[in-house]
Length: 245
Image 1 (tube, helix red, strand yellow):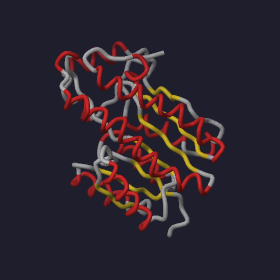
Image 2 (cartoon, helix red, strand yellow):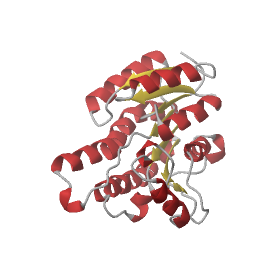
Image 3 (cartoon, helix red, strand yellow):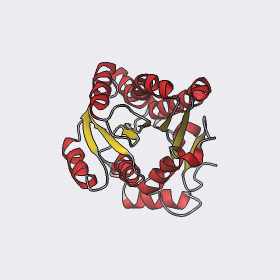
Image 4 (tube, helix red, strand yellow):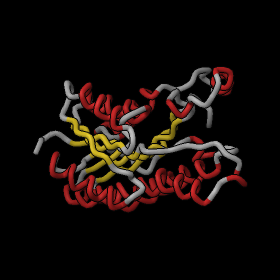
């Protein structure tokens, strides 16, 4: 068992998750990288980050509690426990509210909200026992204010913010902090459906005049799991260039 602290990043193979893995590895954490379908990217990132730290990849659909439990069992055998949990796994979809099917709704809530619930529930006994731990949930500015044609996405992220605040109150006495990072418009694969004109329009709507980078979110996570944020819990750190104030 390594004496270094271990960080589990769900959906860590690409986009914001990849940037978080890179940053936390440089911060000195062991990395447990969770993926579901992006095996090629996960293995590539593992090879890249092995120069910085001890990293292993773990496949699981976080919306399935059985898979999550199995993943945590494997992580505990390899690293000895999860000290830092970053619930980053998420999906997005633009669709009219009246066109949202039962399946679309269940999948969105399953990955974005139930996935975080499953991982928190499994991670907390270890954290509570050692009187230390940090959980960061990756929310969205649309969870704060809502987005047209993204009602199920907005609802899932709003639920994640509620989970963050309530859980922080419950586990604070156990030395565990629970916070959320709420990204604005960030250049990731999720933005691939937008045209250059659309992206320019979104940048123009952002007071800072630019779109976010994945590294901006990773830096916020890095801060919240550090000792510098030891007295911060139950908070939503909005990293959006002023898009939502």
